[in-house]
Image (cartoon, rainbow, N blue to C red; front, side, top):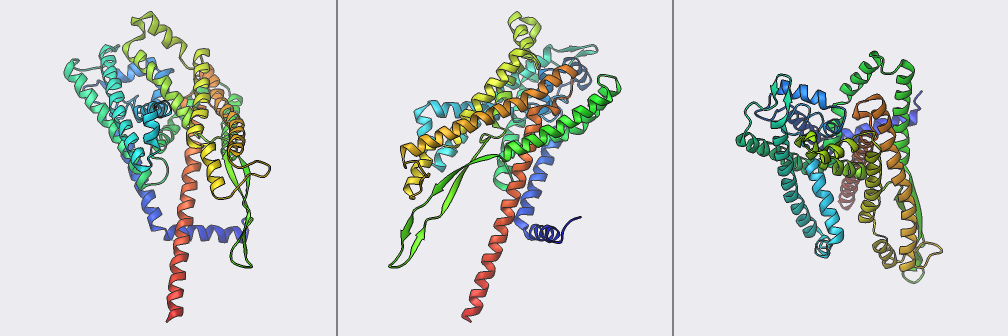
Length: 450
């Protein structure tokens, strides 16, 4: 039974949402943009024999292609204009963030505020086009070499096909990059994450059907199916718990005398340090870096070179080298991205500037060291949590040939993006209510003056 207080709160929230016209416009824009993205995942690349390609993809499935197909929302299995999805942009972002940490010029540019951020974003776009061009050309060459039982995957191989494929693939990637930026600025949430989220969620029904089909074929019995369902629910609950966990650093502000007989301040606050400050960035970055070389190996033909065949074999899902590389990259990006997002020295200096201090810790250098010590410890826990979540389903995928949509990375992206989007919706609703209260107070003030 729902209590009267809870029902009133729900009605109030719904009423606030119904009046928030700007929020509704933002949500409708996001839904429209994601609909355009999903339509693009069904527009095929010109010159491809789709029947032959479906046959080849089915034969080569179960490895790196399935992983790439998951991030592209099924676009790769249909060989559409969004086959590369937004992965070149993510790879370019990784390179630029690493370069910003190592290059003094880029680091100085990053500190120039809005202008510096715009310049780095522009460099990231140029690098995205370059990476998409390389991957698009590699994809076109690989498609020309692929043969199915009924012929070649390409109807008319040649330079014209390669050029047209590169233009189509690069155009699709650049469009998704632009669409993601538009969602971020005019919609709700992070546009890039929402695009990946939409691709994974759209393919979940097919993944459920595939899993039930494996059960019907006897791959696992009903007890194992129930265990799988319970494991997925448990992983989702664990993700929600860990994503909400944070460590609060108590901050005290001294009392100040204002006027002759009045004291202000003296209140205490806290700095919330999330257990997983980096969010879904480490798994996405790690997957992107592993997909980049394996894409080249997979589409250029692993059988043509002993080295490429060895790389393709060892870096497949379920193989120990893949597990080690994936886990190590997640650990690296968890610490790296946290260091970019939260700077202990800057936060300690800001506290000192406004008179705040951590009880028992001297302001300045010791406060920065304390923040760094606490942040390092909780980041280690958060990084191990990410490794556990992302590698646990890998064993089931390699053992039972389950769809990649039930992997730890996909579940983490779906849950984290959902929580972040809901939080932003709530913040927009609170801002709208605050604006309404300010307007009412102004109108009341005018009425009193009359």
